[in-house]
Length: 198
Image 1 (cartoon, rainbow, N blue to C red):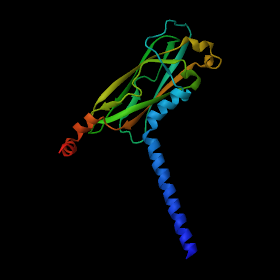
Image 2: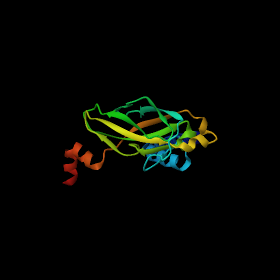
Image 3: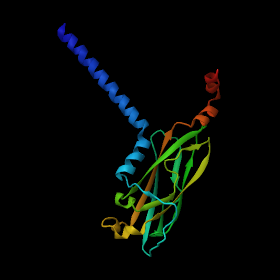
Image 4: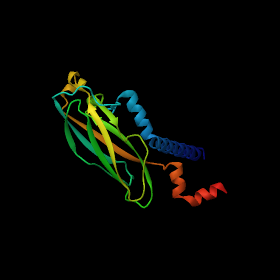
C-alpha cells in the first residue's frame, strides 16, 4: 500500500512538471518576437543592424554584395519573398530593396517580421534607413503588398579587424503570425463584439 502511494505521488509530480514545461514553452513562444528584438539589441546577437535617418556622406569605390532572404514561421499562412535576390552597391551607397507579402486566405492575417544579418560581424555596419521589421502588418484576404527596406553599408567596415574581409552580406527576414489589432479583430468578428457590448 505504501509503495503504491509512492508511485501515485511520483506520477502526480511528473504530470505537474510536464504541465509546467508546456506552460513555460507556450509563454516563450508567445513572447519570442519581442524578446528576440530586445535580446538582439542588447547583445548584438544575430547581426543586429543600426538605424539611420539619412544615407552616408561617404561613398567608397569598393563594392559589396547584399543578398536577400525570406522565410515564414511555421503556421504563418502568408506567401513572402524578396523581389530581388541580390544587389551590388558601393560601400556607403544607399540601396533600396523590396519584399513582397501575400495573404492567400479568406480572412485578415497580422504578421510581424524579425530579421538578422550574416555574417554577424557585418551587422554593426549595416545601417537601415527605412524598414518594415518589428512593425505590425495586417493583410486583408487576397491582399499583396510590397514592403521597402532602404539601407547602406557603413564605410567604417573597411577598417574593422574582422568585418573588412566581408564581401557579401545576407539580410534575412522571418514573418510570424500575431494577433490581429483590436479594431481589426472587431471588424472580423462583429457577432462576438456585439455579445461583449450587451
